[in-house]
Image (cartoon, rainbow, N blue to C red; front, top):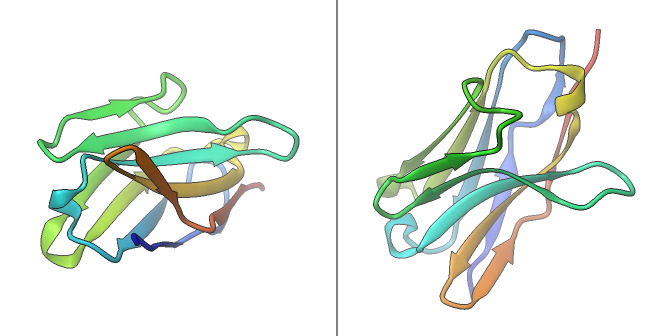
Length: 115
């Protein structure tokens, strides 16, 4: 059973930065894909960024060039560095881990971008 715990959300002004952390109960390098998704109330979850065990990365067009996903295998942690934040980035951000056919989700962390 894989457990996923996110942290690092909060309130930030437009143009500011946040770094989200995702701690996983198993070794990150054994997991096929780690990803961050976000969801606003009443909307579908949107895939924001993903990273494979080979360090291939993928980003939503809306965040490309502003967000960076990375892994620290020794710490079993995945990070999402969020720069040049915009109000439309405000959402609950969820970390998730694809292990075989199963996708394990964290509880989410709130990011609010407001002046």
